[in-house]
Amino acid sequence: MWGMETPQICRAGILRQALQAACGNECTDEVTALQQLGLRPKLVQIGMNLKITLPHDLELAQAWYARRGVQS
Image 1 (cartoon, rainbow, N blue to C red):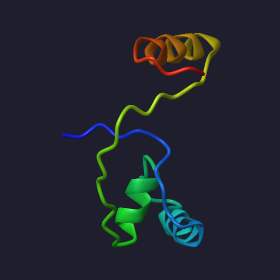
Image 2: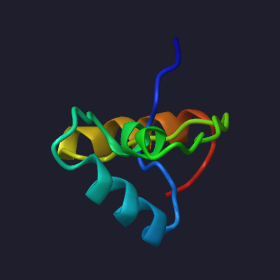
Image 3: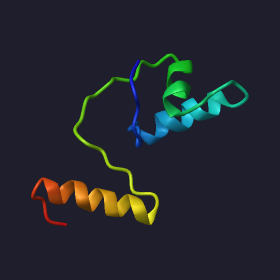
Image 4: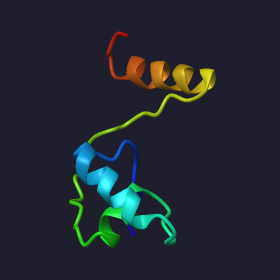
């Protein structure tokens, strides 16, 4: 099992085609739509991908980077 983080990256035209084709099908996210189109998205391992949604998320990200000596 793998955890996915957003954003998932895809060429816009292919993503539009996949989402249009998935309309009416059970589709939970962009990757599922691409798979239903017959494509095989690649799994790419990256470092920390902090998602900033709420003000508290920004505080956590700043603390995380501060512990590593990175200035914002």
